[in-house]
Amino acid sequence: MRRWNGWGDEANQMHLPANGDRFLIERIGDASPLPNATLDTVLAQVPQSRLVAHPLIVTAAEDRVRHARGQSLPDWLAMRSGDFGVFPDGVAYPETAEQVAELVRYAYSQDILLIPYGGGTSVAGHINPFQSEKPILTIDMGRMNRLLDMDEASQIATLGAGTPGPQLEALLRARGYTLGHFPQSFELSTVGGWVASRSSGQQSLRYGRIEQLFAGGRVETPLGCLEIPTLPASSAGPDIREMVMGSEGRMGIISEVKVRVSRLPEEERFYVIFFPDWQKAKSAARELVQQRIQLSMLRLSNAIETETQLALAGHESLIALLERFLALRGASTGKCMMTLGITGSRTQCKAVRSQVKKLVREFGGIYTGTHLGDKWAEKRFTMPYLREALWSKGYVVDTLETATDWDNVDNLLNRMEENLRTVIADQGEKVHVFTHLSHFYGQGCSIYTTYVFRSADTYEKTLAWWKTLKHTTSELIVNNRGTISHQHGVGKDHAPYLPVEKGPLGMKAIEAVMSTFDPQGQLNPGTLLVD
Ligand SMILES: Cc1cc2nc3c(=O)[nH]c(=O)nc-3n(C[C@H](O)[C@H](O)[C@H](O)COP(=O)(O)OP(=O)(O)OC[C@H]3O[C@@H](n4cnc5c(N)ncnc54)[C@H](O)[C@@H]3O)c2cc1C
Image (cartoon, rainbow, N blue to C red; front, side):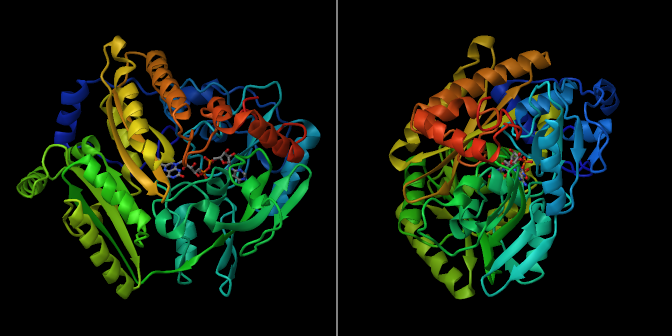
């Protein structure tokens, strides 16, 4: 069963290895966990629903609790403290596009606010109910999880928008296809959520972001159904697909998604390469991408992330052996770890592998083969469970991500890390900060920074620290040529920073599009735009 107050399935757990524990104590000090609220105490707080009975709507307290929060750090603190704030008044679980359309019409006629809910994996407050006098209805798309059509000639699959990653891949793989979209939240996030929040998967180098994969579909809007036809390309004016992507539930509810799928590759392997320092590693990564070497995935950890990952990996003696081997080859303190994926036919993979080996040698890269790459692949979707393990030891963890052009990568990365490291120092707190680059483009790349700090002695204080860390770094990002989000979207947490990126005219255009489809402003208020 899914956890009501954290990530994933209750049956799955991850433990912090002993040396991981020591590593954190050494970096930021010993910590003690805050007490967790029980489900019963939270259920007892759920107020009377303001919705009248409707055959498609459930008003049971537990359904409302389970849909009140996503996965951001404030959500996590709300769920753990039991201080949820606002609950939706009810939840509907439609099974067809017609039922979605009926619910949208009903909500419009009854002045009900609507929140489309995919997998609830938002880390930016997208699906949290907005405080309002009006009743709030969450539409959980989870039962719309079927493969509705497979056009093999055009390689287009039509899926219910609530289909989560594992089910979607299983449906396609049974027919010899893959979508190739693998966000770290793959286990729970849905294809409709990916489109609505402009998601990016770990193998975007080969398959593209959701922008390249989303071919069309159906959106149920208050003004009727918007059908987006599938076209390989078009120069017929602005693209409506683009307006749907990133609409974050404010334009309508996506009921069916048509995606561009690929044949399953013959071979796929992940490799790890170490570099003696950051500048060499970064230059190698940029060259790999700018020379268009056909990788499927690329991730470059800075020195602190490399050190942290090796410390948290467990297998102390094996890691010590690896460290000795790398030191002998010239990579010791300051070394950086690159993980890359090569996917395709056997012949293509062989050719790419030798291109990679040749290129990385020029930058002092030490090729370690597939062993560590296999470990990465094994854990690629289970890492979110580590948050639970850290929480139980009294540590909280969050991430900030952006993208910028190559000429600005070091500047932005250093500023972000420095700010996170120092901004709550006056409270006597140390923050452990580390970064990787991922989602590489010829022009630039995304910067993904993780920060770990001890929970304070109260929930309120922990949240206040987070607000300082998040706000000051978000301001710094948008004022230093970074996007407020490369892949997590805007939600409520990033909405205040969007105007810096889009400008007043840009914001007006976005508002105009949303209000064209939702003239009464009943769809997901507070998300994407500050209402
Ligand atoms: C541990 C973890 C790792 C993550 N890793 C990644 C990553 O690698 N890449 C990445 O891109 N993101 C990542 N995310 C963020 C998140 O998973 C993505 O934003 C994802 O696209 C959200 O999908 P979802 O189905 O859970 O949508 P939800 O969280 O339920 O909703 C997100 C937004 O989309 C809207 N929405 C959802 N479904 C529909 C629909 N059918 N019609 C209209 N609007 C809809 C909602 O109203 C909301 O505004 C991660 C999150 C976590 C917790």
